[in-house]
Amino acid sequence: MGALYVNMFNGWCFTTNSSSCKGGRIVLAWNPNAFTLSVLKVTSQLIHYLVCPKSGSVDFCSTFVYAFNQSKEREDLWRDLCGLGIGVHKPWIVLGDFNCVLNIDERVGAPVRHHSMVAFRNCVDICGLEDVKAAGHFYTWSNKQAGEARVFSKIDRVMANDLWFQNYPNAEAGFLFEGEYDHCPIVLAVYPCDNIVKKPFRYFAMWKYAEGYTDLVKVNWSKGVVGTLMYQVVQKLKRMKGVFKELNRTGFNDIHAADIKAKQDLDLCQKNLHLAPGDSELADREVEAAKRYKLMHVAYISFLKQKAKEAWAKDGDENSSLFHKSIRARIIHNTVHAIHDMHGKWVCDPTSV
Image 1: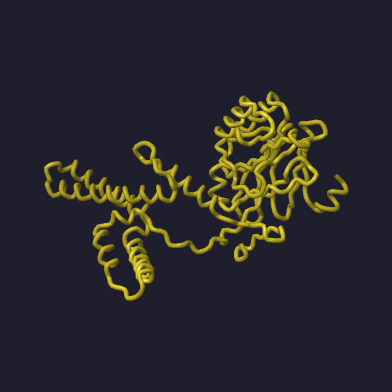
Image 2: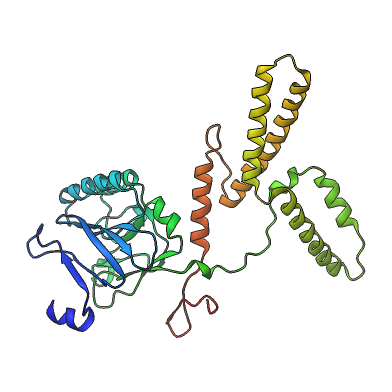
């Protein structure tokens, strides 16, 4: 690696898995001015390490993978990853060549071995990993054969745990053109969080639970506007936008906090009522607190469902953690960090995108 080191990575640090595999199969290089790395585990199919960015970003664990071709040989890899997943309590990203598809639609031109896919899927589920938002090519490997003998597969991927998505929501894996090679190169980019543009106005169904909502809408919509029919509609919609913004500010600005406060008030009323079960005034307060909590909780769940675009809830607690995770996933999926311009160049400046 002498020439490669001098020409491309002069001053960088290197390590390989040659101690676990003759000749080595994975080369890990990093810039010591940007990162401090601690190698934690090395096998013939992975290098697992802790990354401490010198920029002040959150420390994370990373695992580079180069899986063996045979499914039997990959069993050790799945076992090692599951073991790492149990012990990782930091953001964790796993990337590389897994030599196996995760879903049935990730191979074209050749059959998918179901048992191999299931073993990979079980490993991913146990580790709590999900694909990082991807850009570029869907299929990451080709056998380079001509005509009907050509096979495409998605065997290279970038996956991460929930803590990674919480701390690095703007990460994106770019799968580039493979050129004369059989695999697509992967570039993992973490874009600045300040690339977020102003959000457009959106109507939330939770507002309809506000007291006097129907009258509020009727009064403001019925106010006269002079002009063509289309002009009248546009002006009324603009007026309603301001009305809804004010309604949100006064009653729904922090719906989660309002939901928690209503529940705490109900708990306090019920606690006092249990201490004085014959107190009719406390009983009346408990009824009102229950109504208030029901109103706030229904509004909160409506907000979560709309943000997550899910129409269902699980068990009695509505599984709020699931909704929050789904909301975060949709935000990540809908955010565009970079595009190809008309000249085929990647553009990542937020104003140009």
